[in-house]
Length: 158
Image (cartoon, rainbow, N blue to C red; front, side, top):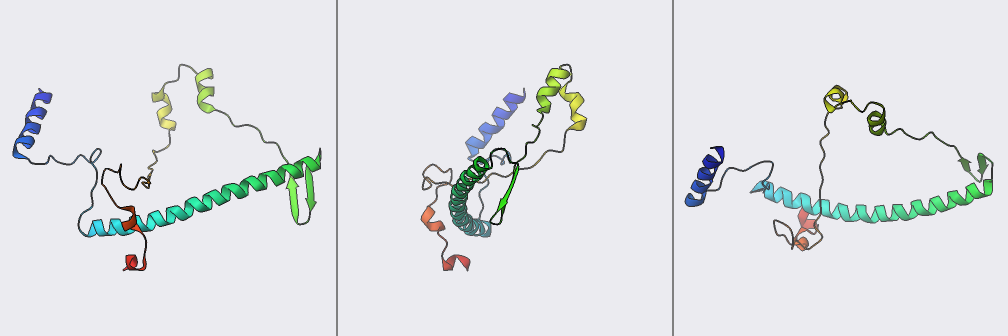
């Protein structure tokens, strides 16, 4: 009966060409008016910073690889020594105990334990945000855009 009522309601929207109410979990938010202008400005700033971040991350990755190679050379020079210091650099080697996979341990040691019994020990849910910058010139975006129009210029600030 519920499906029939939902179908009749939907058909009424189709006939009257009236948009159904937005489903906040499934529909796309589309800013309008001042909110759209602000979104456009924020998108331009975000995309410009994202490009800088990606360049810096690439540079940081290269530097980290060079640092790791240098560290490996020092460790090789040290042979069985645990501590070395020279030219303002101190190298200390240590071994740490491995972590425990608690989920696997609980499954192996207490296979009868249920999710409901674990629920009181579960931490609060965490909210996350994922932002994706479209790099396809807006061709595959649900809302088409021109990336060049998002270029940050002096006029973008006013």
